[in-house]
Length: 464
Image 1 (cartoon, rainbow, N blue to C red):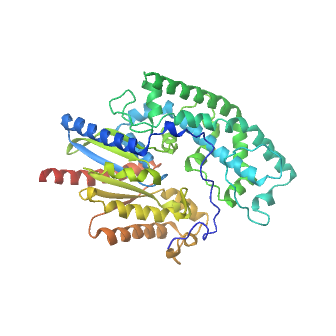
Image 2: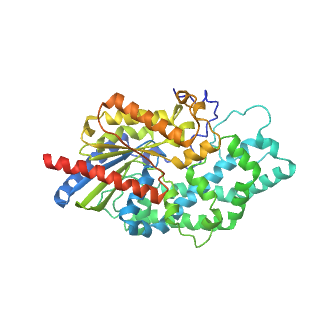
Image 3: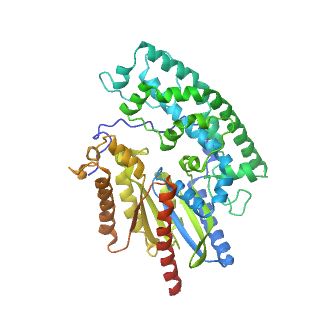
């Protein structure tokens, strides 16, 4: 049994962000998007039929923030590392956006705590939140001197936080379905279209996007360069650390990672490392497709990988990509046992992943596809358990089991497998534990996954 957010006595993180909103005229209707997807699939099928090379279709699914895009980047690193290395400069703006969002989240929490001070609001869109009674650990740590320190740091960082809308606009300039052979390259949907536009675009809209990205990147580099020390002082302040822990402030993994690296990221000559790219988060809107050649002992194959957005509003479009899929890789972040869907604060994220997996496995279009489950974010799960977060406080069926990593990992593996067997009988489900930001460990998993996928592909080919 999964507890709701209220039952777990957990104050939810704010839903939404301070990024600028687009008018409805700039977002295609659901019907237009569906037509565009179907047309793109037909065009892709025709191109691949004419290609003549052996094709493997892999669909990557999972809820938002499950690690799907990181898996795609890891596959790119594994098979086409030179292409990912060439994209490093273009990832600066994503890193800056992740870092600025993390700073803004912290400042919003400080504004809430210091509401008695007449400071200008940082985020007009921030929703009201109830405050627990009695002094918090944060309040106990803040004396008059340290409170003044925090307020001074907060004021100094207002110019940096003001960049969030500009960075978001540069990254979400357009939501379109881009033909694979277009000037934008191989990305379908928003995905990383900004990256190719900045490098390859020649049409007016692409040049405008590239200019927007360059200007936003330069401004962020300049302001962050002069405020990196302030960001670091804020992040490491003992009262802020207490606030993050006491209020369960949900900083995305990327935000916390880059806060710890702010001096390096804030250098004027900064170029993201491969590790930075793996940690950087850019939510997928629509679907991002990437084709890459995979060479094995059995020869060369073209893997066509579909990374599909995971928020609930995008899930109805998933079935469009199931037809002829050779494999479905489903990512479930088992570290999210204490989290709830932003779009549905009553639904535990583990429960949502289980329901998603079972419903997908039951889809008739996937009856011939290999099902691979990656229980992801084991590193974060381990850290939470070591910090004393109790699984049974959020999932009552965990009972009195030991609250250690090995016990928890086996519980989640058995939990997903039992749900799968209940709904899909004897159909195989291949399960791996993963940490998608760990290059060496992830690439060892890829060898096993590729063997599973290609064995089924060969067996299906013999039946044709």
